Image 1 (cartoon, rainbow, N blue to C red):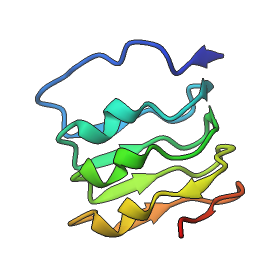
Image 2 (image 1 turned 180 degrees about the horizontal axis):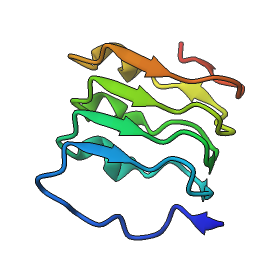
Image 3 (image 1 turned 60 degrees about the vertical axis):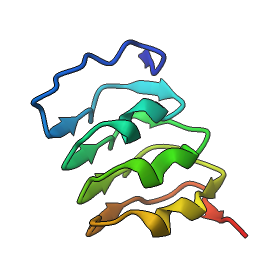
Length: 98
């Protein structure tokens, strides 16, 4: 298992980040949502504690959280994500922010 406090390498020309099936555990790294990515795949890890509030900063068109153990509220900023056409998630105890 790998803690998500690991250093995420910066590949400036990479537009798709695939971090699935890595046994990452802990919080979803908020710095991922500040990167100029087209797609972000975080599925099939052991991520928990919810989705960071800076989610709206992400320009991704595809975002996948499937098969993690996320909890907490889905950030209200999700509605401010510009061109996102697909968000995949399942399970967990997420609810909406009021």
